[in-house]
Image 1: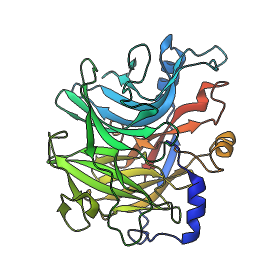
Image 2: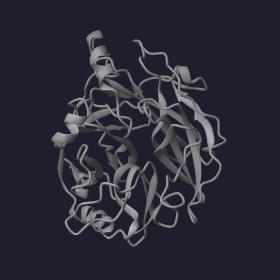
Image 3: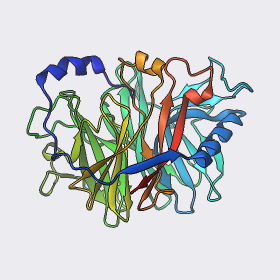
Image 4: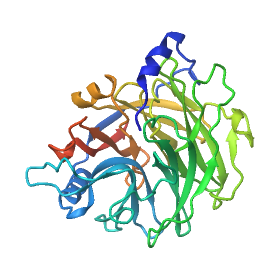
Length: 368
């Protein structure tokens, strides 16, 4: 999902938005490449016979009850990879897909719509769905979907939820407007409304749904938090954290963390022995930040995780700033002092000469 930085540059003159909390540094993170996961996905993509994933932007991952894992992708390349590592310029690109990992660790299949189309087809002309966070309840994956306009993919029109079978991966009837998009009461003006689904985390009593607020003012963005009773993702009452208590009124939603270290709508949240941990990308930067808190509502501390090197062609294309790298922690591999994550390597306009130019990069971070 591309952000309109031209608006941001104009709005920057209005001054920086106040941070949710004073900056607090937490433990340092040592990061190294994860060659095992990198080889797993690269080998799977390179072996495609034409109807499987050959590259894409990871939006989230969910563990199924039987031990399998589903990786959720938005922009996805299918097709075949040539011996020299390139793909045809006419290679199909769709807006949504799943890649399934077996309990053994092997990647087994790519799930799309009929004939290699979007797994979640758009219900309206000139729009498409961007899949974001997801959660599993029983034998169903509940996938949050951002419906965006094709020529203005910055702010969703609405937030919907699709039920997906964990056995057949059939997509059921989509629930529209499950999480409302609304401006919220903040200490300073909110330029754009908050929308939910960036990350979804199933906990003991509640499922938490993290929202994203892009102020465009001072290049600062913020996370918000909603919850529904566990096991009732589609029919449970939605509550929003107002900074002191839970409220049924979405406009009362408060900022829980953010600022310059949260700049893109795709991020992840996992629960570990240390508490709740979010992984985000900075605004107009390639810095990845971990936020940790003892409870979902905070208080969140932050630590710099990693600074990746964006492709110069992508930076030139995207208003001279790094685009959304989709930083996603993979909870099935992470532990209390270790986080395994992926971010998107975006090669800019040229994604054909080498398939590595639009694929996730896998890393392991160790907390000191």
